[in-house]
Length: 357
Ligand SMILES: Cc1cc2nc3c(=O)[nH]c(=O)nc-3n(C[C@H](O)[C@H](O)[C@H](O)COP(=O)(O)O)c2cc1C
Image 1: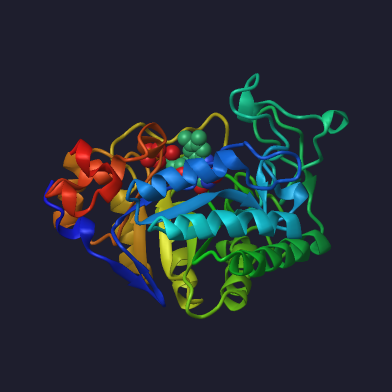
Image 2: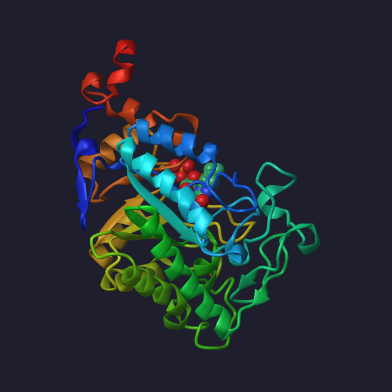
């Protein structure tokens, strides 16, 4: 396709991103119990950086041991983990991409198996088998996972400080961007949604109360990250579930994030409950992203079945979104972004590969 807007750089705060097709965070469940990035992570992310994605968002990375989804998640709370991330971020940048990391607390979607073991995300690792008791807004289980412990006020404060420490660590590791995960049914989404949040205190009930922790985290992370580096939030535009978050609520949340200085909304939807998958539809979050951009007045990038080149051509010609985020197409093909770009390949494929063109 015509390289057009695809190849336009985007500047957010002090960070220049070379193009508008970015890699989505995708957990590899491939760290050891120490949560340190491995050769798998370096080769996996390095290949996609060589492959021309403007930004590499390193997968959901836990802000503390109890915040992991599985015992094989990456973490960013220990010095050893930070040293591993430093190598990973440096490599991504050396290979021409912007290095970003997604910070997460899994809440009730925690202590499960790797997706390829037994029934994966719906199969609990019990405490006696190396798992842990998940923390969540309310004692409501996700699918067949262990019923979580309802969080105390001290647990809630602990989440904010864990996100802040992780943000400072991400900066020291050399990441250009951090993303707060507030979607896909993880802890911050669990607070936002009445389906998973039945609290009677100042964190439950009306939207203002359900947003309290996610907004506290967003404010604290923004304050902890240097002003020249952008902070993103991955947020859900709608729950696709009876009683879940509506688009109107998402717009209010988006506006509040904008006022706190969040730079970009990474727009997704659904995945709060095991039995409520999002619809299988091309570009399903594109219109939502446009609405949230209008509501919040900040940059947006939709994710979810955005990889079809015809769809992307239309998006880059007609849509107000600032970038698109691609997941599975980049698992199958590290060079997806380079192949997509069309035009004169020798102008942008790595010189080392020119004899193949
Ligand atoms: C293997 C795999 C791991 C994923 N891990 C994460 C993750 O760590 N954080 C996240 O926000 N989304 C995660 N997702 C969701 C993707 O980032 C993306 O939102 C989703 O796959 C839809 O985009 P796509 O249609 O381009 O694949 C994961 C998806 C896959 C396939």
